[in-house]
Image 1: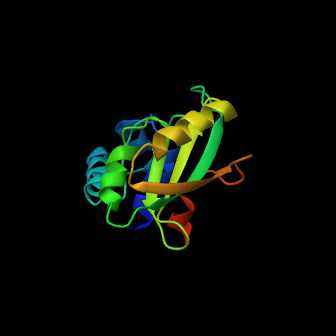
Image 2: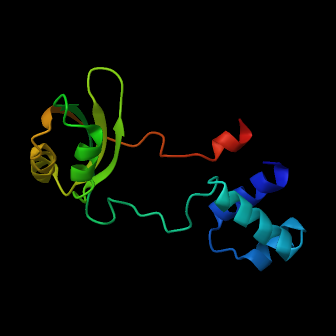
Length: 150
């Protein structure tokens, strides 16, 4: 990745609807160069998507919580992941080291609704128990662009 790639990524991150022709004009490079660079960045996985970013709170899910799951030995992480992916409020899940086996970020419509989400997560017999932490405020939102400068 060179400076042109980084500049191109920043431009599309700031203005996702800028268009290839306008990007080439602003960067002072040929349209084909922009298309080729974007294709390369997508093919190598540097750019992983072009869809709109959704805000769970604006969709009616203002409560964010983090669940640490303990998985029954032999249940398998893949089986639990297949269960979790069927629950719309589970935004992401990771296998982890430490006291738990898996970590999930979930959203809910209210604190009372969070109980329903937790119950749905725990409905799989492969999950022994969970602990939950409710997020109060976002101090640093998910970000990747600073890695371009690192």
